[in-house]
Amino acid sequence: MPDDVDAVRAANAAFYSAFEAGDLDAMADVWEHSDRIAVTHPGWPTLRGWPSVAGSWDAIFRNTPYIQFVLTGDEVAVVGDVAWVTLDENILQTTGGAAESQELSGARIAAVNVFVRARDGWRMVLHHGSPVSAGAPDA
Amino acid sequence: MPDDVDAVRAANAAFYSAFEAGDLDAMADVWEHSDRIAVTHPGWPTLRGWPSVAGSWDAIFRNTPYIQFVLTGDEVAVVGDVAWVTLDENILQTTGGAAESQELSGARIAAVNVFVRARDGWRMVLHHGSPVSAGAPDA
Image 1 (cartoon, rainbow over the protein chains, first blue to last red):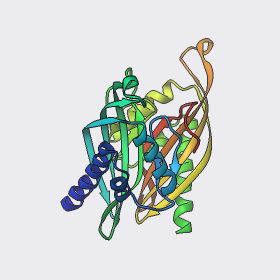
Image 2 (image 1 turned 90 degrees about the vertical axis):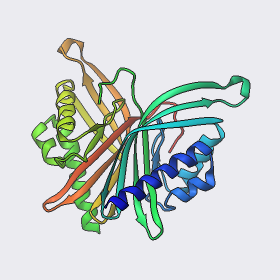
Image 3 (image 1 turned 120 degrees about the horizontal axis):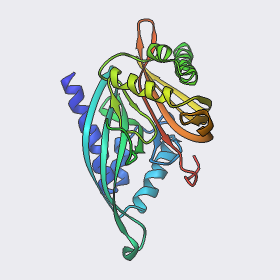
Image 4 (image 1 turned 45 degrees about the vertical axis):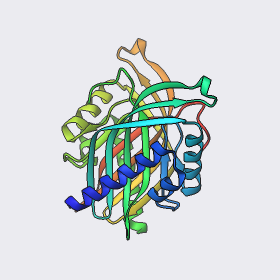
């Protein structure tokens, strides 16, 4: 079980590395390519299936010149061949197209990532992130 | 597997019934009482463990005189002893304390609910709901 937790943490870290790098190939390696996968980006409706999930990453990468994550409060649970990770994404990013219109902003996102064990490692089947309001109750 | 999906749908329905009824005892029956459970209400930080999760429901029930869910687009996945449900919560609710200050409002929440199989049925281990922005891309 400690090995499983470590392997899940590694898969989770690979997700955020791919996100920071804006690397669609690396993101494709992180995810299971199936109909049952789903992603809910902050403020977005849920998108299902690899083509829709991949399309959302492509759109986000094209509109995010720079993003950096500081991950805090991560907790991993493993039950059989499924694992879920809850954590806070403390984000620093620039958004917008032309360099002169880019703005640096920060945000705190509460996220859950679900993984399923495959033969060669853990694959993401769900990512759901949502903005934490400034006036929200403390955890 | 069809039996599992039906049982998970029943557990998911029991969650929303308890929520609509504002019934903390019924909500307690829905959830696993453990440290690994987590809830992320819209705009809230993630709360972990049954005491914190139960406390959040108590606070929500006390501040929600009326809430009604119309659930759409639900999809169920089962892998071994874990299941996850993604769906849209179309909500009609009143909030606020004194009757004269209550306002009826609608909201669309994208949610994921994760369940783990117990001896006597499926127990919720995670609920994460987040507001869908009016201007968000279509699913």
